[in-house]
Length: 422
Ligand code: HAM
Image (tube, rainbow, N blue to C red; front, side):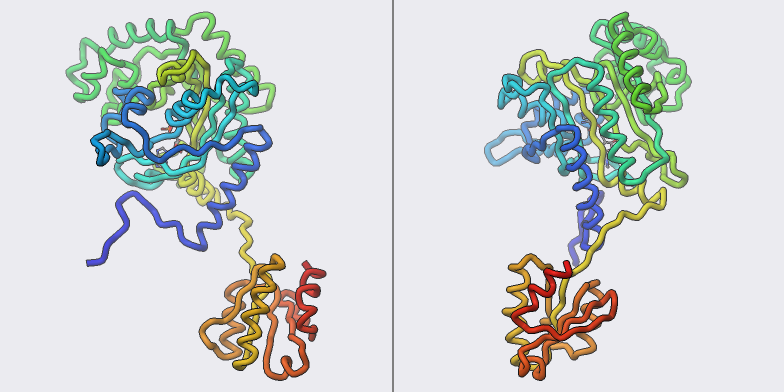
């Protein structure tokens, strides 16, 4: 029996991987512009990090983690997201004492969630995320949102919708919590067992339930935005003002709660409006998490960030009919005919590569025509033909495949010839 790829995972093959490289490069470039530095953390962490960080009552922790015991009997988890690991690293390396503040970080890497696979939802997916730690300035909320939007826009996406909300500070949340309990308690029996468990522990999670999404009480639940205290309201107003001044359009969605526990104040998502995008339209999610650093054992430190998956980004590009300008050209292909020419081609190829050219040759003893076909398939700029006659004369026949122009060049002059035409 053949062995198959695990459900909900993908092989990214040559031909497609170039798109990944292109978008990843765009992300790195943008992070440089916004002054975010890359961080790479392990793919697995102690399970407790996510229990404490993401939250015990979330779907991620309750149902979706790849948790295993290592050979030393410790509980480890494949990271389901990048914020908790980034914060763990921030605390562990005392980045808060670095004079350069805020600490602005980004990551690109695989995340793992045991979810029901469907279009745009995988069990292994690659997140690009940024985290800005150490600033409580609402201008950085706007910066992080602008960076997320720029990723999509610079790749050509247009049909985007930004939704924002405020989840308030701890004080506002307490009042809202009481209101939610009062709202759901009398009829909690009509909800799923998860929601019943969440009622006292974390009633806000009920609003995020996928099963009971259509229950009438969901639509009439008191929105957090009505419970914001003055400070939280002012903070949210500032964020909105910055966005408006930057010319960024947004919609306030008072029902946006996000699926992770660490959020407070600003929460946001970007959706695709493209027709035929599919059921899952959320491309990106993020928000402020001012209590998380403390929760992970660091000093009280504000933080904000977002993450998006490259899988959903590529789906959105497809839905808007955008093809990325990925060029996959080879500079030179050597066509060699005859034993002596073949031998010479091997060392000549090596010289070309050392000089910085992307180059290749035939390795299957193909006939002239088949070698040209191979070169064509590789999308080469120059084909250099070396046969017995050329060897005798110490020349090589260089054909520019774009213009059809053909020239005889001295073999030891080939590299200079190509360099002049680069
Ligand atoms: P999240 O909303 O759980 O937030 O995920 C963020 C993004 O990751 C989603 O909008 C989506 O693009 C992608 N994503 C999530 N699950 C899947 C999946 N199963 N398949 C494909 N893509 C997926 C977080 O992870 C937070 N750590 C974001 C954040 C960073 N908040 C603050 N800083």
